[in-house]
Image: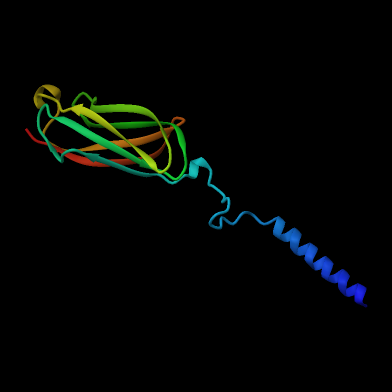
Length: 150
């Protein structure tokens, strides 16, 4: 009888061990945790400017900020906006970057058109777009509205 009880206890302990061993990682603090695939990495994006209202020929500084908990390599930062009447963006730039946690910032400098009529840009509000591109696919975007005055 004693041997049967010991055998049952051994089987229960062994079964519990096998079940525990096959559990996925739980991500307790201080342990290795499961990381999502890069395509599911959370990005926090922001686009800020040195001013909200601009005039002819003024310099525009646009600061892009990318925050991420994971290292991301070979990203393209694309900033564009203020389309003229011929369909060309008057603000248009891109840069390749690698992002280490917690994140990075890049500043782009552009000059506003000097002549609204000649440049085909009228006074008003314009949306400036900020995109993050990885392997040809947009993985994040953010926009900001600025105002042009004569």
